[in-house]
Length: 124
Image (cartoon, rainbow, N blue to C red; front, top):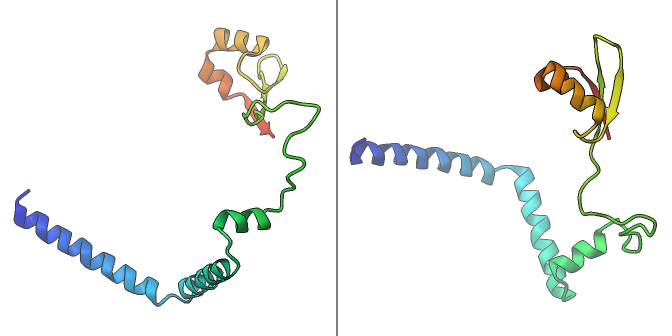
């Protein structure tokens, strides 16, 4: 691509971006959000608070129940329960991981793609 073509393409992109920016500037929702942001920053300066202070104040989660005393968190989210049904035998397998004995046997016998197609549903 020649330098002139590149220049013309960039000029067209700039024009398009400028039109989009002009539309945004006239959007009432943006104006309301900017107004809110300015008022919030003014209040934060007036009361000498940081953004982290405001977030901490407005966070609805209580700080006392961050960790459960009966279980230790590994930092990883709980896996979803997957329920498979073998159409040949009617057998159902529920698992949260791929290391389930019956599921592994099915994958060896029928192939992983086929077994994945037997997925009935997932639950949290």
